[in-house]
Length: 64
Image (tube, rainbow, N blue to C red; front, side, top):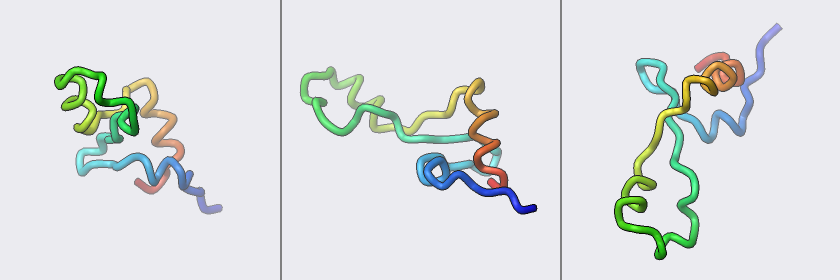
């Protein structure tokens, strides 16, 4: 039987060529004016999924 991809996970997470899992940094929608410039710059960049969570994410993305 075919495995199903978890669609909401697939929309949020990108799998790179070397099988790293990349997602957008959270907390960037509003209330950013009160944060320091360093925090704002860091939020603009993407981040890698933690290794402890990666196993569960890979289970949700069987063909990635």
